[in-house]
Amino acid sequence: MSVASSDSEAEYHAYSERTLAVIKPEAFEDAEAIENHIRANGFTILAKRQVHLTPEQAAELYRGHYGRHHFPHLVAHMSSGPIVALVLATKNCIQKWRNLMGPARVIEAQAYWPDSLRACYGRRTKYGDYFNGLHGSENHAEALREIHFFFPTMVMGPVLRQWQVNDYIQKHITRTLLPALTNLAHECPAEPILWLAEYLQRHNPNEPELAPQPSDHREDRRCHTPLASDESLTK
Image (cartoon, rainbow, N blue to C red; front, side):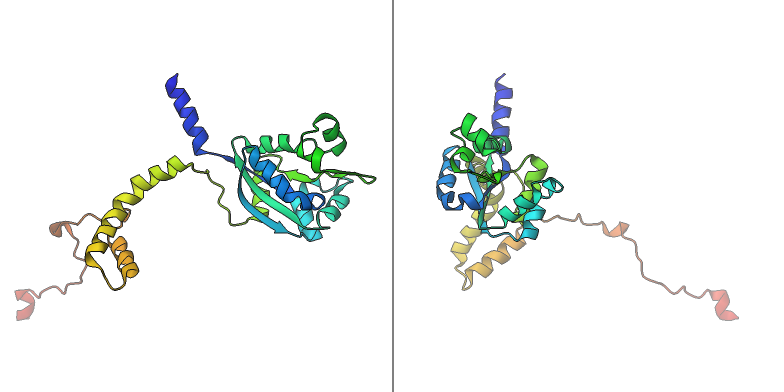
């Protein structure tokens, strides 16, 4: 039982799910308060970007809504002012963020989830509930697509905890770097950075080594001219 518990805990610490959160134009002025609320609820903000989408970009972001009657209004609204895109991380991040946002319709959020972010920062207008203040990815596939929409170079991998970082340093870095720095201190070269780079290159523990091939088994690929026989010389 204790082994299963340990494995479960290790899995939790080794991986944190990610999702995209967007603070829409109507809640842009409240971005700082929303970000503080996000952190207070156990999320880590891995990346942040303030942008003003063009209609074409907004249409691409919400392409899953294409063909629905509200699609033109949604595109016009999301390109009407600046927004803040955030990459959030925590355990069960996608669902946890959707719970924190509350229902998509502001009237429902205010009636049944008054503490949700959409209830607090959404806007009810005569045009409907398109101004709910926040956006979140629906599932893993959409989270990956939407995060790369705003952060194309972000690597979608596990978020390591501090103990894992320390463990990696001890296992894979210290055993190589410590001797290098010791030798650097003894040598005191004129160009220490260059010297260290060359030392690490020469002592790279990950560089493959080729086993020496026995000399008697090596194939001699050189061309040889055959020697003339005694019979051919007398003719």
